[in-house]
Image (cartoon, rainbow, N blue to C red):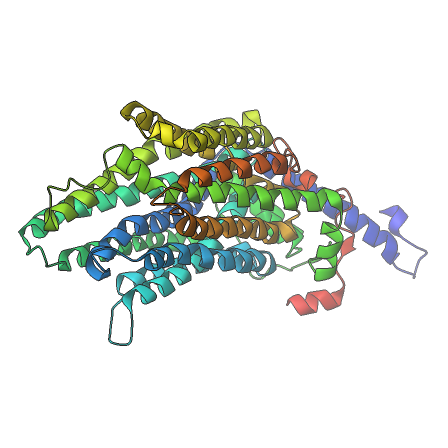
Length: 546
């Protein structure tokens, strides 16, 4: 301290004091981050996994359940007991359209307002949107399908908000060694959501079996109760998780780099690493530091650098590419279910008996397809992501998918002309699901969730995720409009060939991404970390923050 003192009576040199403070604060920041990056797996990480994973579970359940519910809706409100092409497309595309807006809006808000302040709000929107669908009604001037489409769009906004928050939060709490596994394990909950959607649909169908079979063949009130129950139960996991979401702590990285409160962040790290809790002293003096702050000018400066921009471009296109094929596979499920014997019931069955058999077949078929590909693929990725690396798994997944789609597309007619060929086609379909999840469907969230600085991490993630949902919308609309060109399902083989080409572009977009395995989030940000804090913030900033 002697070198900080000027001549007697002249006090302390403010420049020297500022320099000393900056050095000390940078050291404290690096020490706190090192504790997070090197922390062993703990119950706190398990809590983060469960609380964030429930979001993806709920998202997947709600998205998947409409595939079964749409059939039920067709029996009750459709012409000739099925929804028209436009109605079916509307109820299925409304959610991804809403998701685009949710990802962009909540991605930015999570950086601007805070992860903690926004976490839970998006879940409330999902619950309200889901509940609204279950209670939708019809009147002379109101079409129930239009009401359901509206509520599914609202639900989609909430689902979109869940994407950046449920990935960024575990990313900023995880250690370097387990960060990839934690993020992909959160995403793997999507498979269980789809599985439970099919399981709940099967249970509801079995529970209403007697009511269906005893009813007059023209009495279709029972399917009306069935779809409402199936959709409405999607509120349950969200409601269970809501309390924990509202009480989850702010990430130390946000507290340090955006709230600029290094002392509080360092204390938070000490507490959650030791006992998994946080203690905030409301009377503690808040000492803001001066660090790079988010602004439109700073955003342009950061992303005008090619090494940052190419990561964002690679993340956006990779997500766009995989969502085109992932949702394309989902739209092709009806054909696959027919192929494996779980599609349209026997023509000998009529009336409500045919309705029961059809719904039962759809649920069982989807259970089989989920267990055969999506769930195992996701967990193979969880256990290998921090050993093999992000880029190798993603690039390999795109390449294998390209080969599979080439085979399925160019050999489509030949494969589906014989029983053996059909079974092989089903096997290829399951392999597509497997390598989609042991590949880009699991890894596309990692680069935008790891490679950008804290002040833009959620915003960039939202942009990349929204690019993916643009691909999902294009896939759903395009598949619906193109598949019957030249005859019923005649153009499907050409769509599979198009998917193959898009998968090849995914291989090239993966090359634009950095390998983030083994690196801290700060090292990946391409910013100077030694002198990240330049001193204490000016008083005017403290007054504004207060």
